[in-house]
Image: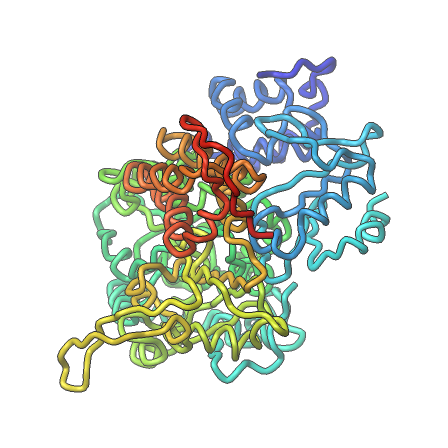
Length: 176
Length: 464
């Protein structure tokens, strides 16, 4: 399922973006198809999500068919075809974190930013539940490999550890 | 971050985490060089490549990523001068629930990994290497990438490294949130830019048809780091540190219901499970008793506190004798855990006390596997989801009498019927939880059946 967007992200590709993309492609001297994931990461970091024009741009860059990129976009949980919040809160759901209270922590994050704590998120390219002002997204993710300091959450690029539900408002205040 | 104990516990022996233990140790190259960094590499260049492979073989280094495959043997599958390009890919996709050691190596001592990798590449005639880091470690990817730049600037990477005539380039490749990419052939597909569906073996053993269909070694971060220490210490000192057939140290990651969760570097076979939980990790929370342990990452079969195992050990006269071993006396090494029907895996020990409901625990793991199945093989794609649906329904009070049998039947039809070991990984929790804690699952299954609704009976209540 592709999601229709009004503007085409590819119209905003700049020369510095192209040179960054070229640099990434140069890391794969044997086969440039290997640069698919790096270019998807680059695109999503720059534009927030990957639209059809992004799929086509990356495919053209790597001499691939758009479906070769689309099938990655819809497989990997990290990528999305819709805009997410400015701050993305990824709470670890798996065993050690769940035992240490990550369900409660996730509920606290959701209620603190005004999201339904029980909204289901199925992935496949869709954005995680996001506040209407576009500030926050909150989702569960599987094991973040920090079980010794459970419960943890990845907030944008930063790992926040040993989270107690009472600390949630203070954590959020750093991302206003 | 979980910090290391300022002074190692008497059971610990730090090689991998030796530098990281030093107060103020930073991940930059000058700090690394100040503590003897890249000396093992200089030593490697005085040796012949096959001597290094033999040394790693003699050191009994077993893989630290999960399968515990002997690293030297894996390397020796690569024919040094077969005229083909070779690749080494470092598996830094650490995602096995319960495991969190590579995270600290990548963030805090990246040059240790790079040095180990250059030596490994030199030994196997490899000139291009990738470090596959999961994207949930964005800082680690940046730190390792900067470390590669520093190493290059100092002449440890690139053309003609330290005048040896040996060339190597290393790049960082980031994953995108899929657990399956930790499976080595899936990782290679991912690195080739494809959907990460694991390859069928045979014929696609990485050492034969790996990255770009060329001979490839895939090793875990911790495994590659050990190579440096094997060169430094020599095979004899290194093997003496471990147990027979399992040399050196292994990082045990302990999480769950212990007083001091964390990671501890321990000589292979240097502690029993009881010592690890009750001594190193300071035991359980006050008033609690031990109920269950998952010893090697979530895919390892669960062990029950009261269990006793019959293990064959070599007696004083050299004859094999059967010995009865209670769970807490089981030694934490690859062969001992295999002997009790589970595995050391990635060294992720998850401890559960008497407050834990085993159905709830299994359901958590089933949801993980249902989410992470890549979908390539029908038994796993469908079965992992069915198991998750059944345990979720049971947990919500909708269990029926046939549920435990149904769960077992689904799990039995996944294990051994899939392309990769994910099939076993998702079946083993269900099989072992049902086997070890049958009463908890029976209690959550009301004595009615969908097809044959029974008259009103008093149902045993689900554990609270």
